[in-house]
Structures are given as structure tokens and as C-alpha cells.
Length: 231
Image (tube, rainbow, N blue to C red; front, side):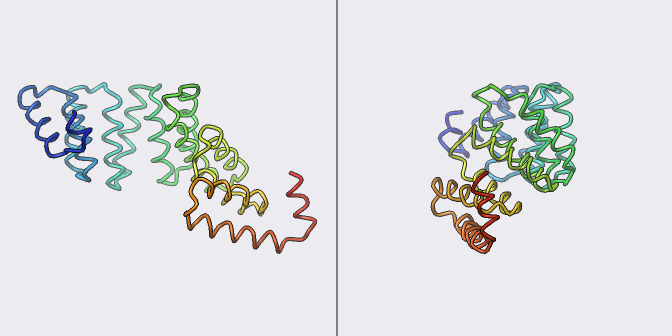
């Protein structure tokens, strides 16, 4: 494992393979081998290793999450979805399984199913400091889904939830600005984009979006600007 943490993937791979030769049923070695393969972009090899984990431990929900994640990274969402569903079936309280399922549904355009899964992940992670990064990602995905469905108010609340959890998340501030821009709430969009740029000043996409919002605000009738500033 130390080789893996040090980034010595070739040595780590050899070590795990030797361990498997000695103990073919060593689940951790198969799992770690799959993770190394995945980090190196060897998707098919990772899937084989992860499937060995589930063969040895067929009721280990995390194993199916790992297989699904590998399929997803390989662009094979239709194969990823059943793996995530299996993980949720085996362990309904495994937050990462619900998150992965929700993210996969989102990329498949199944927005209603995505919302249900992501909300369940958020619920399971609530109040768990160790789950904060995953909860942040779940809210981000939820924001994207709501916006894709045209539910801009709900999207704004989801992106704001990320800001409450992680005030240093430039992506959330940027997407909040994009959503406000879609609402033609340009004053709020400007504040959001400026917050994103405080975190990541060299973000060209955000710089451009800020200029667009500023230009549109300047063209708005003064009555509209006053309404926005009073919100």
C-alpha cells in the first residue's frame, strides 16, 4: 500500500499481484489493484479486478460502486447503472451508492430519478463531517439537474447549499452566477461571479461570464436594476 500512496504504481501493482498469488481470496489486494488500474486509465483491467472483489464478497455494496465507477469513467453508463442499483439494493444506507446512481442518472438525462437519488445521498450525509466533500458534489449535481429541468429557483438553492458547506468552491459560485444570469438577475450574478474569481482569479470562463452580466445589467432599465438591488 505504501508504494501506492507514494505513486509507485508499477511496484504497487507487482506487490498486489504477489499478494494475490499467495492469497487469491485477499479482497483488499484485488480492490487496490483495481484502483491503481483505474488511476492509470486501464479501465478494463480495473473492472476485472473489481469484479473479483464482488465474486469473493458478493454482498459488499462498495464493490459494485467501484465497478460502476469504472464503467462510468469508460463512458459505459448503461453498464454502470445496474452496478449502482445493485449497491443501493445491498446497502440502502450507503451514501456514495446513491450519489453515484444520481450522477449517472443525470448524465443519462433521467432527471427525476437523479433528483431522488441525490437527495437521498444528501440526507444520508447530513451532519457527517467526513462526508462533506461528497455532500458538496451531490448538491452541485442537484443544482445542475434542477437547472437542466428549468427549475432555476431550486438550482440556486442547491448551489447556495454548496457555498454554505464549502465557501471556497469556485464552481458553485460560478454556476450560481450562470443560473442568476438565466433568471436575468444580473446584479446577483455579478456578486456570484466576483465571489468565484476571488477564489480562482484566473478563471477565464468566469471572467467572461462576469463581463456579460455587467453588460446586460447596464442595458437594463433603471427600474429593474432597483428591484434587483433591493432583493
